[in-house]
Length: 239
Image 1 (spheres, rainbow, N blue to C red):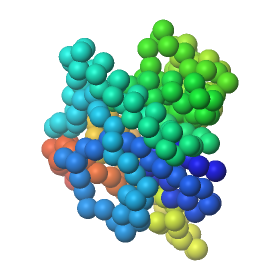
Image 2 (cartoon, helix red, strand yellow):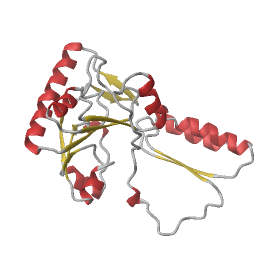
Image 3 (cartoon, rainbow, N blue to C red):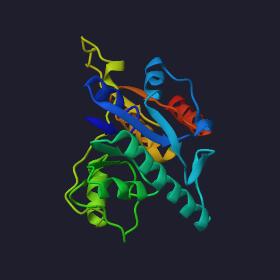
C-alpha cells in the first residue's frame, strides 16, 4: 500500500514492511540538526513543501497573527496537498498536528475517500468546531489516555478515539539480554522543554530520593532552550 505519513516515528517501520511511503511536511531549516544515516535515507521520501502558520523561536511557538496571511498559507497548503495526492495516489494518510498547516489538507483527503488517522499530540485536533471530518474516513489517535479523555470531554471526537502512542525506534537500542533491573531505571525521552514536563519528573525523583528509594534516572532529548536544560542539571546536582 501507499502511505502518506508522519516522518521518523512510523516511516521506517512502514518501509521495512514493504509499503511505499511519502512524507509531506514543511521546512524549518533553522532547527536543523546533523542527520543520522537512517534519517538521510528517509529524506529521499520527504517532500518539504508545506508552509507553516508560524515559527519556533527561543523555545516558544510564535503563531502567525495576521488573519489574511493565515488564510493565504492554509489555501496554499490545500493546493499542495491536492498536488501530492494526485501525484502519489495514497491508500492511507497518517496525519499529525494541524495547528501549523491548517485543516484543509485533512478535508481534501476525506473528500477523496482516503482514510486518515490523525496522530494527535496537542489538546485540540487543529480544526475549528464548525468543521467536522467525514466519520467514514477519519479517526483520531491521541497520544495518551489523558489526551483521549480530554478530547472526548471537549466534544472534539465524532467517534470513540483510540490511543495511538508515538512509539520509538526500538531497533536503535534493542538488546538481546536485558540489563540488571534490581535498581529501578527511570527514563525521560523526548524534547527537553518545559511543556513536555521533564521538570515534573525531576520533582518526583527528588521525592523518591527523600524517601530513601534507590534508582537510576536518565534524561535524553533535544532542546531549543539550553537554559532550561541547565536548570534541570542544576536541580539534579543539588539533589
